[in-house]
Image (cartoon, rainbow, N blue to C red; front, side, top):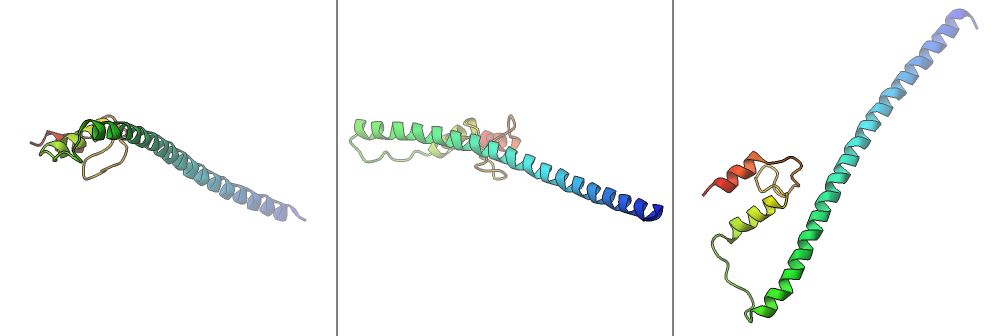
Length: 116
């Protein structure tokens, strides 16, 4: 093997290592994205479980205290439910409805709540 062939082989190996390094970087970015999504879903799942526990605890008590099957729905009840969802950490705007709020406040949600 002469010097040029040896240099060409070293250059070829260096190119392959560079390609592998780029693939590892891309995989690392995908793993980071998946871990972030997993954490967000865990938080959302825990909040939904807490909400279900609260509703299950409140449901039998309200049925026992009132002899009626259900109370009539008032006009402001839907608004109150949306406000409660927002303050529990979920979006109520049409842009991200139902998603967990990861930032502090959503301007779309707040503008929706402030409409009369």
